[in-house]
Image (cartoon, rainbow, N blue to C red; front, top):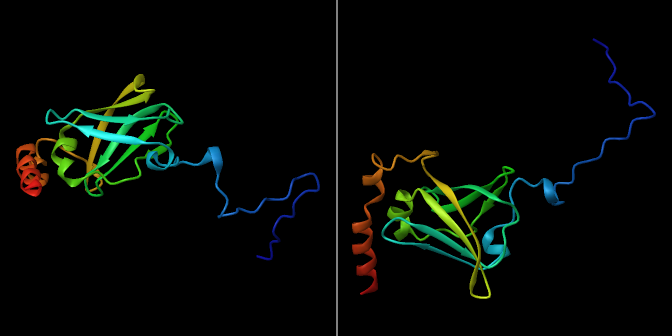
Length: 155
């Protein structure tokens, strides 16, 4: 058991050390958040239609969106598998509406005109698993209950 570690060949390049403080650039699995890179508005109506309005194009094409009920956070996944976080928590009074939405439309405005849009599926997660919109609805409340709560907070 006196085996020696192999020595590098003369023609091989020495191993580069990993710098934990250096940004991986294009190889990063998580892109800078929407909040850090552009202005945005998240809109959802009582018909469970969600829309994200932005003022700049996304770094990559969106593939789907994920809303995490535990964290009240919204993430987008690109076609290359990178994660694009919203960067702000979604107001808890939107939970009943967001949990019932099945799509989110991302709209880019330029000079107060529609520049482009993209509709992506919305996956809702609860306790790390996919949310069942029917069975789990009592856990997070109904849209009617959220309306009552929001109106009582306004008064």
